[in-house]
Length: 212
Image (cartoon, rainbow, N blue to C red; front, top):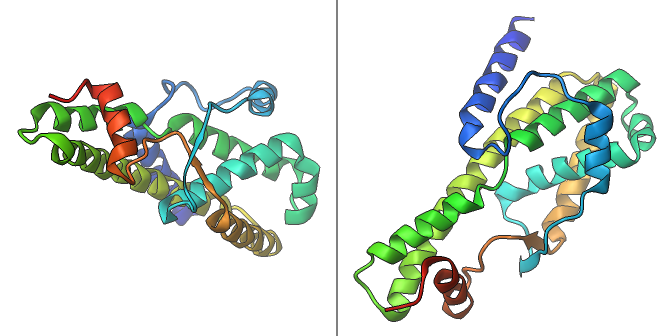
């Protein structure tokens, strides 16, 4: 009981610390399940670009857990059977993942601001200036990914703690299987391509202004 209380307080503190990454202001702890499920089912993603052959290590668990959220919204019965869960426990997982998804986003605009600050303050020119801006973007983007990964690690721990021994075994098997699949799948992202100067230069000049 004491561990559970400490763990819950830690998760609450991490949620509050994530306000800089928040998509919406925090309200009360209740959510409209029907509305949330309908929103998730009907969502259409933004136009995406494939930038890398695999996801980074920091991106895998958040991607797996967000896919799990989608599966709960679309096909809850299959997960109830697979994890040996009742309706209440599956709903608890859905609420936990929905709240995590609400509080956290990629904070791409902050990454772009850092990139443009480096671009505007650089004394270099040509490719050197572009590389400085892209390196600043990549550094800030790495910080964002690590923050999100740490946040979702806490969310995952919270979910696992509430499962029975049988359900935990099935859940961990599911997570490991989905991690392998995600690691081998193409990485789809809305971020800026920083792998080479040519592709990165277009993004830098688009967001930050023309080269001098």
